[in-house]
Length: 242
Image 1 (cartoon, one colour):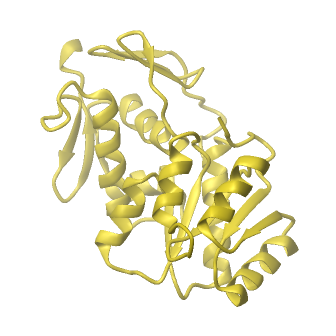
Image 2 (cartoon, helix red, strand yellow):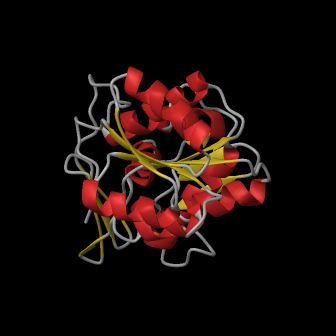
Image 3 (spheres, one colour):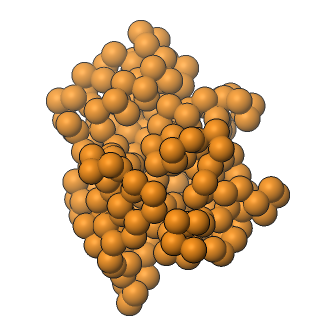
């Protein structure tokens, strides 16, 4: 299984069929010290991903020979490597479709270089776990229902079986369970998990909370632990411990 290498997240696979944009993005990434692999089609992107095991995938949705959504789906079947989606589609349903398939972030064309670089830094920071305040590392084991979360080892089990979470999923879970009972606002969670560059991307949280519920709730349609506070944010409760 291809995974991101902690501490050496420098190799980026850029999949974009528009050559002028691909050259522009590649040049700006290389100038800042990244190694960049380039693909012009979805099939080429998958082949490079398997062979080179990049630490980050920047993926255009509208590509020939397999579109970006299918590439995203196939990558997510085997890896938690972070994925930033680039697209000219700006409808919320398109954003949600990409996030549902496992994208970590979403950038709409046209975009500025600094905006893209901020997103790249943010996703790599999450993979390297640098967003947590170093003075107070989360430790210990938390349990709710059939779920056990080992914060020190970043390991999640349900009914004794390991549950694979992406770095972003675990980061959200960690924030919620270490502050059980508190309402965490959308903006607070986004800035804590994604970084200070974020704040209004509420659909990101909606998709990721749904994913956590699917993996950890006994009845995802009627959540017992991960509760929505409409218009405000989310709250974790553990009725088993009360």
